[in-house]
Length: 106
Image 1: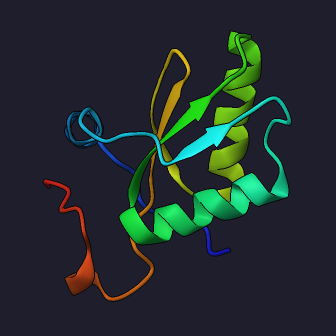
Image 2: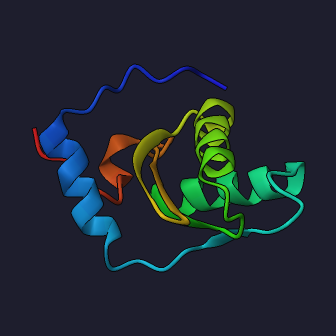
């Protein structure tokens, strides 16, 4: 996986959070935690949508934060938001820029 050089400003993060408000979670993390299959599903959805929401079943905030950080590290995604049991991630499409699904303001 190529490391990303993309650093987002607080206004850009706020823009992504606004876009994520209306989307539904595409991946659910259950009692088994962050398995290889869950990571593959997150990868597929990041490639397809760029901005995704993940639902975590665990009630422990520390565990959810660890999952949040681990997903970012393993998928090279940008951590957009973590509120309650919902995590939001963004990763620009690895294809040509003209096909970007989400336009981030400068």
